[in-house]
Amino acid sequence: MKKIVTPKLEHLFGGFQKFARTIVRTSGHPMAFVLALGTIALWALTGPLFRFGNTWLLVINTLANIITFLMIFLIRNAQNRESEAVQIKLDELIRATKTARNTLLDIEELSEEELDRIKSRFEHLARKAREESGTDQAELIPRENADAAVVARSSLETTI
Image 1 (cartoon, rainbow, N blue to C red):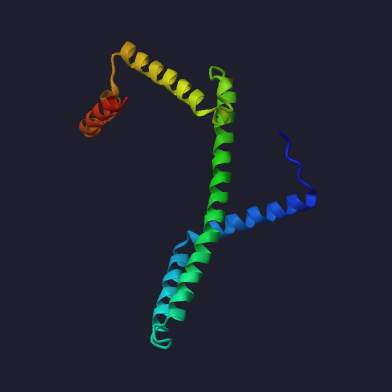
Image 2 (tube, rainbow, N blue to C red):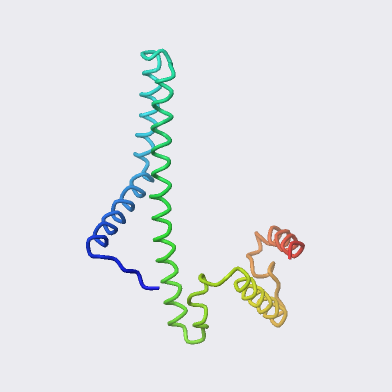
């Protein structure tokens, strides 16, 4: 399915992408946290002025809800872009590796049943490779983490 986007809409979407990236990056900065703390402190200090009334409570509640509502969409947009970029990079690695299966390039578009079937095939291949090499999961992990690996492996085997 080909997306039909007019130049005007493309410019609008591009502007939104830039805006979303800027807001997400800025909101993750330590100064954004300090600004939020300052806002809450200022709000708390104005409590006696407004006699800690309903309007005073409503202001911070409304402000927090609006910011949260909008941030959900901005963060989700940034996550979608990052996920697509990682997927493209992985697709390029698969495509560039001669022994890789190019049929896995669009694997994210498959149904849950198809993904489960492919996953179980790869799990079978991994078990077979470990059996042939005579190693198990605990041997693949450095010695200091071996005890945790044995526990993790036994719990994994009970869930499979």
